[in-house]
Amino acid sequence: MDLPTEDKCKLGRVASKYELSGIHAEIKERRIQEGMSLRELARFFNRRVLDATVGETGADVIGDPESIYRVLTDEDVPRERRAAVRDQLEFNGVDLDELEKDFVSHELVRQHLRDCLGVKTDRTGVESITEASDLIDAIQEREHTILERTLERLQRKNVLSLGEFDMTYTTRITCTECGQSYTIDALLDNEGCECPRKP
Image (tube, rainbow, N blue to C red):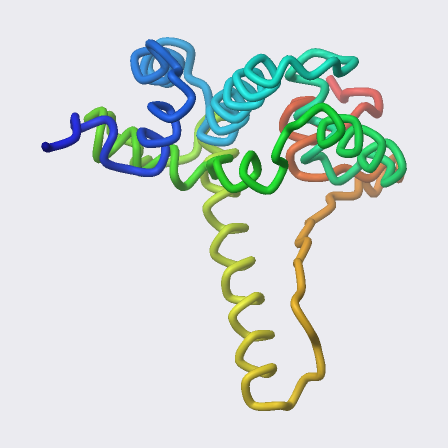
């Protein structure tokens, strides 16, 4: 039996798995009508997956899906806080390996919008925070992949001694006027630096 068009990519299959009714129309509307970036849409979708998982297990976890998702994925969250939330989720029966495997990236959101929902994601220029966010996400994803494959190639050739690894790749922007440093996501979300704006 053929799958519906919107269920032929990973995002669609995950949506069906967690019975996220109406999620395809909501993603399309948030992109077209609200101008949400691919990164924002990925976070929105993943929070819905998390909410469905916690609800299904009846896990007694302190915090709403948005704050729990931030703790699980935000690099700025203290390691102790992340470990405590992970322990709490696992204690209540949440399979974190399965859950995190079902999270989607902004690239998968792009693919779903383009190939399954018929929404164009190509940009002719960068004229907004949303467009800049999408472009930067694509560049970082590509650079992350190149770095990861380079390390794996060195491993295979026994040039680099390294076991199984996870790689975190973060770019920070520092304002030379006030000295404040931001991740790119934080800078875009804040729409700039917090030092006094020039007229």
